Image 1 (spheres, rainbow, N blue to C red):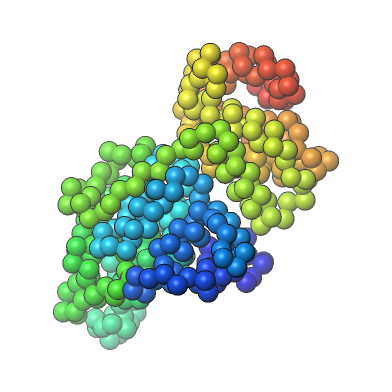
Image 2 (cartoon, rainbow, N blue to C red):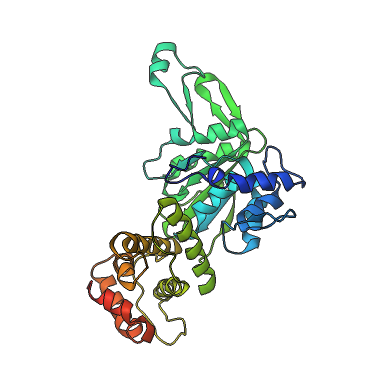
Length: 360
């Protein structure tokens, strides 16, 4: 394991847990899977093994959703993780690939500029010109490599990819083969191959999936955390992991500080205070759990490098304001209203009120 890396792949960061699960896993495994579906679920959701080894949870949410996702990967249908930004779609996809294939790196990042070659294959043009079309001149895509090795391929932000390019996946998902007409050849998928795609709800309609492609996917909708406690636990856990990776020399934040941050995000996201007594303007941003984690880590960096190492309201204020106020006109009004009608009125939030007001 290379500790000098800023961020390790899931199979590197959690290699010990995966090895312990493999040793104690005596349940049936689908072809080419490194773990059984039960062990994959335990790895993702956490638990204690018979030998007393503790597996940390990677995803905090409904077990049934994770089980459906894992079961889908054991069938001939691909998996589409759908949800608003910040619902851990990418995080879950990476860990599912790591647990099933021990390889989460077979990734296609979808953008408006993604070409069909990115999903299928390209060419080494120097070899192509020198030797003509051949397997040696072919540059396989991550999906082609996953097919050949019987692993899981990942496609991020599927709905950002142009519709005509998306449809390059239809033959791969239905026939489990990838034709190479230039060589009068094909690559057939080895057992264990499948695809996990992610898409967020706010992109729906940008490049909507064709009905033919949608039928090839089983869709699992990942919701925002249901409760304040659940979201607080997620933010606390992920912020601690990122803080360790960044080696931030700050003291762990108090639970009440994390709860306060998550409360702000949930109330502005819902347009209502938690007690349902005050209606609020909703800012234009997503105010996702992932953004709350970012705000907390930004605050810890401020505390570590420009403060006394302990998280203060002033350390959170700039990151919090920047996360809420995306549109200078609309969001500033919503944020000022929230500060005056909610934050100011909460007795133990006076420090946060003063810190945020200084930035307006």
